[in-house]
Length: 489
Image (cartoon, rainbow, N blue to C red):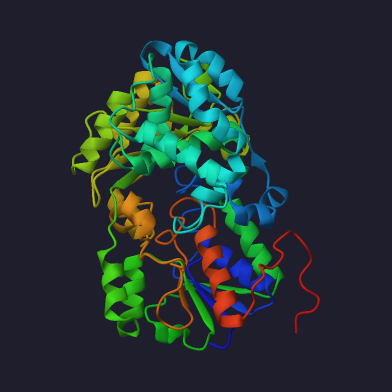
């Protein structure tokens, strides 16, 4: 290979790395093992013609606050649809906790818990950009905003320790927070789940939880278009199994799991680094079902019908019990379910009058048990008659998810358990954890900081480190929408 840079893997992180390289005026080639690009951000007709389903990621709160995507000008390249309601959490009897983007409106609906919810989140919502900078960076850094970091840490302790229920009197507010914390697929209460949930809750009331019009595929297509416009090349159907295959490039960024990085690096890595990669722990898993529906989901609560994102699982106590079951290697009897009804805000996802529903539940890693009936039953509790609206469904077990994307070890969509220990050592304790000991080789996946979600930052940070160390470029190039560099030679 004679390219300046090679990127292995065309998921959001890999494409972000390639964007940075191409915008720096370097020749870059992206190699993707699959026949299509996108990884965890693809859209396809999984059930019936005309029903467009997001294959993995669906809603993008982290995309809205990502420093990479904001510099890239994502919202000027594609249409991001931001709803008035960021997420809803139904409870028995037609009740629901509703997280409006408007914090005041949310607080007003929470009754006796409104003041407590307000005091927990308001100062952080006002500092949303600073929260994003802190939570979407390597944890081994001098805080750029120490006051915000301290506020976030106090809130994390408040909601991540055994006394997490002391401030609440009703069910709605704690259930809403349990729902966002469950995204981490971690036991609750715990500091790691609290950190993930609080960041999501803060963004819900600041920038909102946007849905890309037409599907998550539009995000990766925008990045691919920019790479090609600036001279980059993307090849699909090419699997890289050894560092020898990228030997000619001055820099290589790998959007692969820590385990795959160890296999690819082989004896080119020192023994201590290979051991660290192989010791990297993977978390429990997701199992996903997509539904094509004859009509929108018949929720008992009208506000839930208007919310693209819905968290199911009952009270905080019930959600926590379900997550503890999964952490102990058991399938929960009454599981937490994350559902997304994109067609509520994006009619292009389904034929007129019909609807799509994206849903996953948490299961032990390597589970091969189909969760279609489990998810259907959980939805029926809050939307009686849902079963009768199903025209078709498509299911992926935890094992299926790994077969789809090898980065999802055992169905772990985070590509590494987001525990506190593994937020510090992801996958090693280093101020530049993206840079491996092998010259010119970088890890730029969700197995590196800042971890999971579609934000592109793992790849962007890796590419920026490579620019500095391999090319002597200390300044991040302009990533904003523009014409291709005329000065390229």
